[in-house]
Image (tube, rainbow, N blue to C red; front, side, top):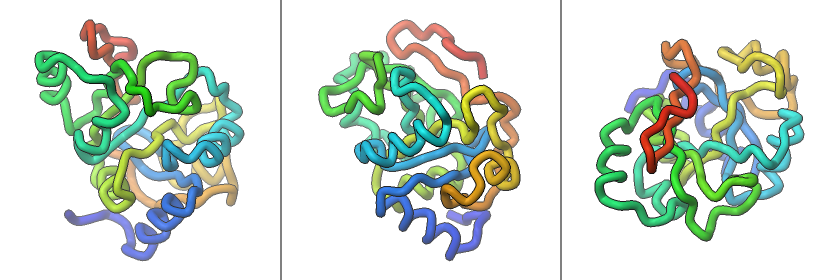
Length: 188
């Protein structure tokens, strides 16, 4: 896999993640804020940075199904087959959460939003980190999501490490669908 970032910058981003820090990184449509989803302190930092309520919950991205499986309650084969035809790619699915999902990830919901990303750097981050990552748009609530490094710095300054890179050409945020009904929650 050929990354579009300097190897040292990529290594630093992975180190930040393994040390429980929050980073900003490019995704399909916008820059995301990310961290280890099981690290409550890191997730709380994202909530503070974004000025966002814990009730909303977060999307998790991953490099493959194995990185997401533990967060999702068992699914009927037909549902799983339908979901996996859209991955890797810019479709996020809302699915019943497993018992291990902490409230700081699911918020007030009994579901969890998940995506297997096709973005080269985001996928590589998940692979090198060894698991799924929180993925929420890099912006203070109410402001436009950052689409490049400069916009991330304008909103967050030096508070987090920013992995330089480019978002994919997806013009809209990723589509979100209900995994059990197939209903589109947010058009992509």
